[in-house]
Length: 251
Image (cartoon, rainbow, N blue to C red; front, side):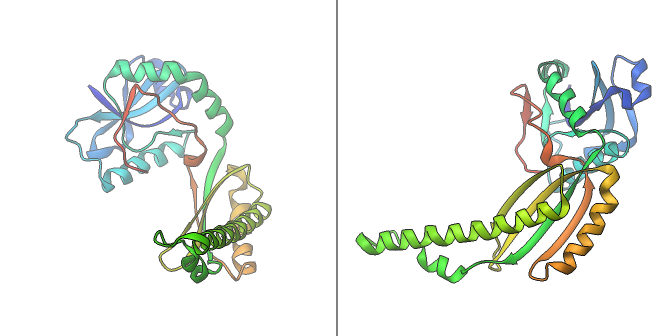
């Protein structure tokens, strides 16, 4: 039997599981395709899974169901989310993966206990978008003009990175997260979008939200959007090795 995996938690977070050596139903929530969710005991850990058929579509609705199950578990325990689409071929594959990664799982649970992820999207004007577009070298250009365009493009790209980094540093100083993950991309509308994940203590969520309200007023040149608290998606190390088959779709 194949198992679809949602997340890992501590076994002690589920008192009913302490008396069992086999998977037991997790009645609080249904999984992908409304499949029954189970708590699968694995030493000191509990793996939240549901039975999986190759015919079960892993589409957008399934991705939402995946996130919903993790969020439900996160309400009462520390969780290590699996990437959407992680499937174990059978019981042995699941047990083997947990055994070989158990020390890392336990260390991550200990590191993330009592913490949550807050997600900031910061939209700001791109710096010199027209100049960057003009400076991109034309493959048909040769000689000095090509090298000049190449240098100009590199210089403008560094200017863009510097601006994004400055805003990121400003966000870090304002919110003082325990850890952060930042990415930057250019939108079709000619803006720069900073995608920032902050790891904070659960007890600091209200304070963080208050800081966001202040930042929204202070940073008039930026459009900001906040969501969370979420399970710590961006702060979990890779959860599976080759024994877990990942059907590639990004969460």
